[in-house]
Amino acid sequence: MLHGTEKRVPQSPLTPTTPHAPFITPADSQPDFTQETAKDIVRRHLALSHHKPLTTYLPPATRTVQIHDPSVFFSPSGANTESDDAQAARTAVGDQPGSARYHGPLQSVLVRCAQGSVLSVPALKSEFRSLMGAKSWWDGIQPHWKYPDGSIVFMKPPSQT
Image (cartoon, rainbow, N blue to C red; front, top):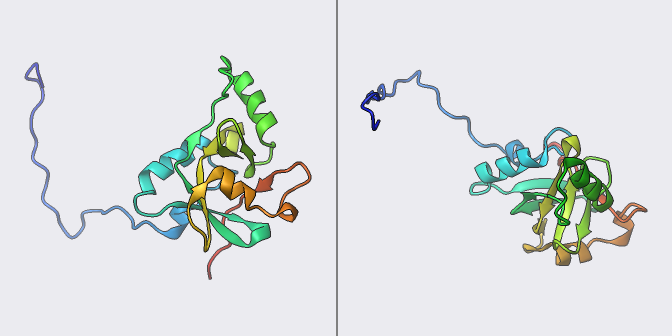
């Protein structure tokens, strides 16, 4: 534009055949930790959270859980290599996609995603509960809902038919 090479082209008028973006459905707000990386889930959150929060499912509780303000987890130790980040994440969370555990230094629940990536979630909201910080939410997890290693597993909510 500064060099005078760009030209303004008017947008063609809307017609009945002009394609429109699809409506956002409840399925769009349900991350699949086995198929999506932490980066994919953060992108989905940024795109949809103003309309509908991301929702996952905690099977032992038979309740949905909303994920608020997620970010991609990077090793808090300042690891310089990807393998160091992967090792730090492995010690914080299990290897199974969807497995989650509270991480005190970050004050977040860490969730394993596809390709070994990890999602950091500082605030969650269980069905029929208020939005709360990760520590308070984690303290409300019943001991019998946890696996022997102290983790829980999030899944996609069962289909609503």
